[in-house]
Image (cartoon, rainbow, N blue to C red; front, side, top):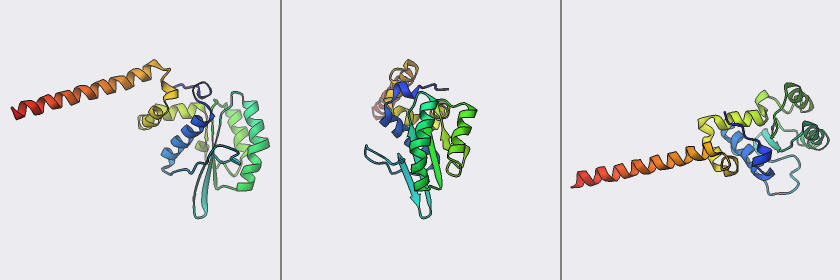
Length: 175
């Protein structure tokens, strides 16, 4: 399984984009995103008639700092926006107790257990082969990791060898 430290590997904007990509793919929807600046609690927005989903990505190293921002800044935004679903993606690993604290804070808004994604959940998604294309789009994750770089280079080399063999076969048939 992958074990990326998202605080070390990605700045806030790429982390926010990664969160949107993973959840968009998982949910098979497309989030509207907005330019940099005060986002009023919305990093990604999807809506259809009466249904709406808000995605918020938070990049913090300490749970106490994360929780304070969620309680004092994000919760009032969510209460004002009143989404049907609120999906929170955080860069750090959460204990069961910490996750329960967040579920309690956003009770009625985080409506499914998989709507709170932490570092472990993100790494599980990126370890799934169907999500590898997302991982490859975020080079800041894997460039420092020799094993991922090796995997990418091997695929490129194998593809090149297959192309050479195909050309040689066509040449032999044409002769």
